[in-house]
Image 1: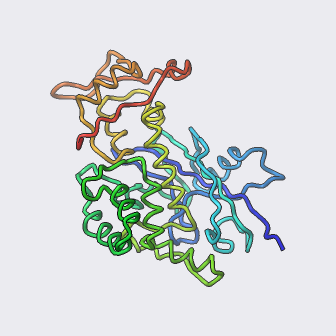
Image 2: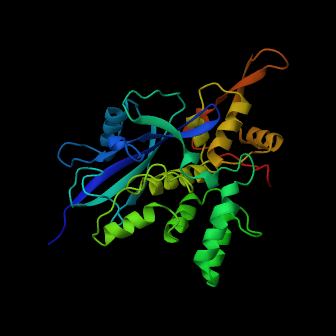
Image 3: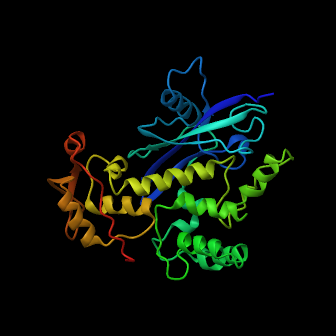
Length: 318
């Protein structure tokens, strides 16, 4: 007999506040964190996006702004009965969305918060140097997993910048998937039991040594969203969806650094930004003492005309 399929929708909603990139999370039943999620009703919902906006607002009190579809997720064993969309034993296929906002956005619903993405992926934040968890925990654990298998050794080195390999910031999902495959992500054992039809529970919320676990495959969806955003910064002007209408160049740089997880070379970033024509000065300054900072705005007319590209990311470590 064919199992019914239920379509779920999940939102990776992100903003940058006080120099930190944060993601909107909920805690169903007060347990492990999750992304805002809900079912798609084929009879009552006109579109996926309208359904997503409605349940995110209902769950969190937050109104989504910029939204784009990410990917479709449907691995067997990914959802415990009724854990995500009340589907019972149905197979759940989840469609992930990326949502960006520039406005500081308080949330009114209980068990809802803006959580730093680095809490879930501590190895992705290089702003203060190479994360200690890479060499203290991840590298030894992957070496044990790889053994004498040169293919595994190469994948681990390329993804986690081991040996002489460079760090490629956009490969967020691939790094999480490798930790999952190696059994290092706490969600891996939970999903193995579910796929075998055995009892399982969500990993404890306090299991944070390799990032805080999330329910279902929400950490995979979050990794997809963060990786997409890091990559898209380079070819589309999405950084300005995370900045206010008027901003300083320092604010823009801190916003980009918060997403990329690495420091940028200030002078090179500003020179490259100037060549794009994406921003223009407003002839006004803010700040007291010293030299006040000039205010700029994003030229949306370029984006509307299809002429606006992304930003050059001159990483300071390079």
